[in-house]
Every structure is written in structure tokens, then in C-alpha cells.
Length: 132
Length: 132
DNA sequence: GCTAATGATACCATATTAGTATCTTTTGTC
DNA sequence: GACAAAAGATACTAATATGGTATCATTAGC
Image (cartoon, rainbow over the protein chains, first blue to last red):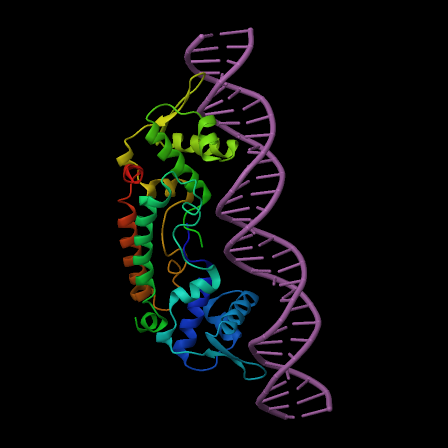
């Protein structure tokens, strides 16, 4: 069970690198540094650009740059972009087949755990990663 | 992003039901109660049986029964059986492409969160679910 | 021996994830 | 203005995971 897919993985690395360089970075440079397939990297960066994490410049001398401050980019945000909304209990409780229905203890417990984890995850931003 | 797949979902429900009935239960009964496709349910129960959660009896009058006490069956166990080992950081950190390598802060942070969540998940067992 | 049960196994369908390819648009430089 | 170097858009393919089906073998009670 993977909680972070390769999409998210590459995206996080790319964003970290771009954040550290503090200038406009081309796909070519990223591909060389991170060893990720070119077309795949392009697609990821385009998505990050559409989602307002990155800013892009076309034409010669173009590339990508952060659109917002590293401390304002949270990894849950990136996860959501590439993996959809993060939640622990998918189907288990939405159907009322669940023997205990409303008062189901499992639901409550899992929700508590999920909220704790999310609250902690929400605090991790790019700035705190690259400071390491 | 689903953290509990349908496999696990059905397995948990089946185990809960069997735990509540406290007797040998056939696939037919489970299928009627839970509304899960028969063949699929069979496969799931066979797996639970192989993994020593359930005990099976062949032949007429046969079926499935818990092999261990409800309070000793934890949902992480079931998750592991159907979804593999539970871990937050799949690929992101195992490769040393990670810019910060050993001292990577993200790794530490994610590990802490993961351990917290797992510790809490580990405490939820079947007994605590059916008590609700 | 029949029937009702599980065991083992092989297969198919669908969805998600990962990756590739190609054509278009923009922009700086000569 | 022509060219080259960049991203934008989009469509396609491949691999893997998930969800589900089907069938034959084995076991045990009546």
C-alpha cells in the first residue's frame, strides 16, 4: 500500500529543486538532475503550473519558477493534485450495510486517526523540507 | 486515494459478522447478509483462513469460524493481508536521489506521522468494533 | 453415493498509474 | 523575418493493481 505515488514523488522533488535554485529552471535541467523521463516530467510540471504552484515562461530562456513561497506549499496540496483527496475510509462506512450504521465505533476511531495524521501532514511545507 | 480497499472492507465486515454469531458460518449466509458477490467472498474467506484468522470446516455443515479471539484481531492485520504492508513513504525516500539523503527532514517527519497513525490503528480490534 | 460445503487455481474486466509521442504556441536571438 | 528553444495541449500506449468470475478438486455428513 503506497500512500505517495510516483507522480507526487517526482513533483515534490522538482518543487524542492526549483525552490532551492530560486530561478527559472527548464525541464531539461530537472530531467538531468532528477533522472526522470522527460515527457513524464513535462506533464507533471504542466499540472503544477495549472494548479498555480509554478509559474511558466515559454520560449527561449523559458522554464518554471515557484509561484508562491516555499513555506506556503504544503505536501498535502501536492498529494491532492496528483492523488485526489486524502481520506482513510473510502467505502467501508459510506454504505449503510455497516452493521452498526450511525453509531459505528470504527468510523469514529478511524476519523480521529485520520484527522490527527492529516493535521500533522498539513504542517509540512516545502520550506521545512529543504531546510534539512 | 483510498486507504481501505473493497477487499479489506468485505473482510472486516465478514469477520465482524462471524465474530458476533459465534458459530460456524457458511459463505451462503455471509453473501445473503452482506450482499457481496459469492465467488469474491469465497476468495476473501479462503485467504483469511490461510492467514489463520479464520478456521474452516469442509463438507456438509461446514463453514468458517474465528480462529482467534475478536480482541486479538486487529484491523491493520486485515489491511496488511489484502493491501500489503502499510507505509506512508513508498518510493519518495528509498532512492538516494533525494537531495538531502540521510538527513532528509521530510523522511523524519513522515515517519513520525506514520508511526503515530499506525500506533493508533494497531489498537483497533474486532472486539472494539462490534461492541459499538 | 449424494449433496453441501471449502480448497486451489486460473482466468477476465476495469481502473489507476506510469510513461510516450506529437503537434501547437510563444519568445528570444541572429 | 527565420530559426531555435522553450512550454501548452492532447492523445495514445503499457504496466500494474483491483475487483470479480468460473471451474474442478477435495472433504465430510447423511
